Amino acid sequence: MTLAIRRRTAGLLAGLALGLAAAGPMAARAESVTVFAAASLKTAMDEIAAGFAEAGGDRATLSFAGSSALARQIQQGAPADVFVSANAAWMDVLEENGRIAPGTRFDLVRNRLVLIAHGADAPRVEIGPALDLPGLLAGDRLAMALVSAVPAGIYGKAALESLGLWEGVAPLVAQADNVRAALALVALGEAPYGIVYATDAAAEPRVSVAGVFAEDSHPPIIYPAAAIAGRDTPAARRFLDYLRGDTARAALAGQGFLPVGE
Image (cartoon, rainbow, N blue to C red; front, side):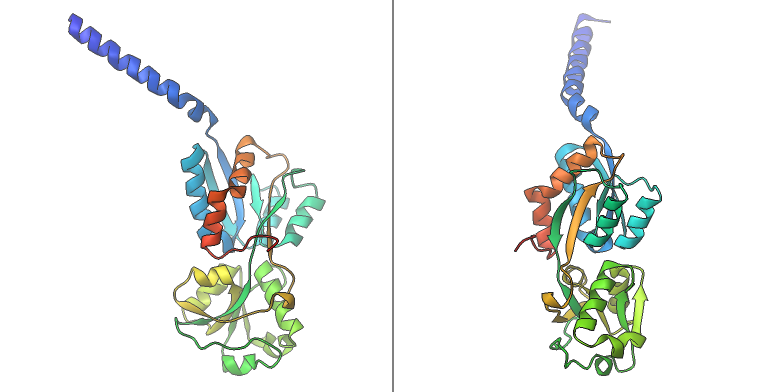
């Protein structure tokens, strides 16, 4: 090997060593965190997970479903590191069962409940006790998430009951496994109307908001987040910290989620 080649090889090796040294702390720090999140968070959480990986090198693996289904999976030992629920009650259940890592729970955002219609230009209606919802449906179906288990369905039923509308419309309700599934029924035209979160309506161009439910017609729609007991890893803590940060909050606000306490 000539002297020139030896020098060039030595230089390449030195550069490689410096590159590995610079990447070393990031490589050693990078971990994976499994996040169970309410289906209504999907659009925002996909963006947040990408930003989280870019910012620190950790990778967030996301699993979306109705909060009730996710909570039951966690109760049964599913390998979730972080849970973000669309309902405080399901987080309460896990906390009471010792499944939430102490000191990690916080309220992330809140949401609004809306009546959506198929199509981009549906006429607006006033949501109140005088609304003839069965007449509006004209014998067709009202899409909702499961009214006895999924938060969006629970909130929707509570709102209709408070307005005295539930009894008349209950036989016409088409229940879906989660709020995004209810949204899809309306988007595809399989149901003319549905009740979902305002953020779901904003994420789907094939539906329009026909009306907004008064916030006092249902319990507050709060999204708590927490690490799971026994899986409170450094990566889980970093993800929760990232959720509290400006970048994640901007992503949530961009999808129509509202700050807690405002």
